[in-house]
Length: 513
Image (cartoon, rainbow, N blue to C red; front, top):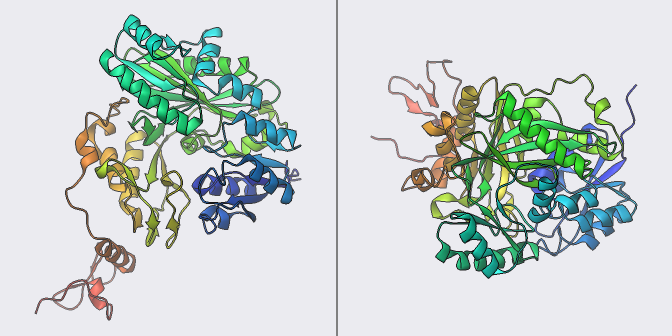
C-alpha cells in the first residue's frame, strides 16, 4: 500500500534549475507544486515545470523572490501546506522561516532558531568553539577597522576578511599585506551592505594551500542528525565554487569519520532539523578547520545524491513532515560508492573577467547518456534575464571511479551546447582536462596559479558555425553504418561530401569546383 503524500501542495519560493529540480522531487512524492515568478520569468523553465504558477510581479529579486509579503500572499492564494525555499534568495533568512511558520505553514528547511544560531559566520564560529569543533584563529566580533587591523598584526599575515552575515564569496578578501587591510575592509563592507544589509566583518588567519571540504548533513525533528559525507569544492573563482565532486580525492575513511562527527556534533548542539552543510578548510597535514554552516540545500547536492543513493529533496520533505531518519534511512548503506562530479554552467564570459551575460539562447542541447544528469533551468529560445544569478544549469556525471568520471565529464561538456550568449562551457572543459585536476592536485587557489585555464583561446567560433556543426552532428549517419561514413561525414559517390551538402538550400561553404 502506497503511503499518502506528506503534503498536498507545496510552493517553491525560487526560480531556475533548483525550482525545476524541486518540482520534480515533489511530483515523485505525489505532491502538487506551485511556482512563483517575476515578470521577467513568466516563461522560465520552472514555471513550465510546476503544476501551478503565481505571478509575483516586478523584475528585480527585491520586487519578487525576496519579497516575503508577496511569497506568503501567493501561498495563501494557492492554498499550499508548505514552502520550499531552494537555495539563495530567502533560503537562509530566519525571518522568512519564522513568518512561514507563523502563517501556519511548514518551512522545508531548518527551524528559524537553528538558522539564527548558525546563520552568520560569527555566530557559527562561536557555536563551533563551544562544542570543541576546531576553528581557524580569528576574531568573531567587529570592533571597527582599527581593531581588526590590530588583531591581524597580532596573528600575522595573510588574513581573510569576511562578511559576518553572508556567504557565496561576497565581501570576502584575501589580504597579504597590512597596508592593504583598510582598503579591503572598506570594499568588503560596501559589498556586504548591498548583499546582506549588514556590513559587519570578521577576520581569520588565511590557511593555504588548503582544500575546501564540506559535509552534507540531514537532521530530523527527533534529535537525529546524519552525515552524508564530504564534497570537494576546492576549484573556485572569486571564492565561488566552479566544480564539485564526491568523494574527495584526499579524504580517507578516518578523516571522513572525524569531519562527519564534528559536523554532526555541531548540528545536534543547535537542534538542527533539515538539510544543511558544514564547510571546512583542510590543510596539507590533514588538519581541518570549521568555516561556516549553510542552512539550506546546496547547489552541489546532486553529487551527494549520486554517491549515496539518497534523494535529499525527498528527505527534506519527509523530515519536515515529522519523519524519523532512523526509519527513513533504515537498512540503507550510506557509504559513498563510485564518484560524481558537478560542473556549474553559467551565462558568463570567463575570458572577460567572468562578465555575466543576458540575451536569447538560440539553441540549447544538453548532454545525455549513461551516468549523466543535467539539472537545467533553460531551453532553446528562452530569454536569459539580467536580474539574477548567472547559473543556467548543472551537468553532473557519475562513474565507478574518479578517472572515468573525469573522462565522462569532459565528453559531456563537449556535447553541451548553449548558443546565443557567452557561457563558461569551454572554461569548465579546460579545467576538467587539466593534468593537475585529473590527478586530484587542487587547492582553493587552483585557478590563481593556472591563468591559461581562464584565458582560453584567442578567438571564439561564430555561433552560426557552431549551430551548423550541431545540426550536422544530429543528421550524420551512425558511425560505421551505411557506406562507411562516420564522424559526421557521409560518403557520396567517389569524392565524399559533408552531410550539410545534401541539405537543399543550406550551405555554409561553397563546394570547390
